[in-house]
Length: 136
Image (cartoon, rainbow, N blue to C red; front, top):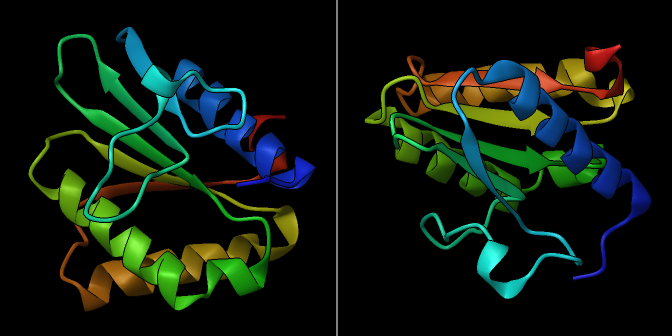
C-alpha cells in the first residue's frame, strides 16, 4: 500500500511517543513501505496495525494506528480496527492503543475513541490520541 507523507509522519509520531512513554525496552514492528518482511506487525483479528510494540519482558503491548483524514477516521473499517485493537489489549494489563491524527481532527478522534470504548464496554482499556503538536 502506498502511504501519504502525512500518514508516514503520523506513524513516526507514534514511534517517538512509544520511545518517550515506555521505560521498558520495546520491540517495535512497523507496517511501513521500508519495513523488512520480518518487521511487520502481527495481524489482530483481520487487521494489521501501523505499529505493534511489545516489551522485552512481554508485560504489555502498544498498538498504534495513524489516520490522516476525518473520512478515514470515521470509516466502518477504522471502527472495526479500533474495536479489534481494544479487545486485544483488554486482557493485557497496562497495554495501550495509540491513535495519531492531524491536529484539525484531534477532537473528533478523541470523541470517537471514547464512544467506541463505551459502546463496546472497553472503557478500561488505555488509549492515547496524538497529533503533531503532542510532542512539541
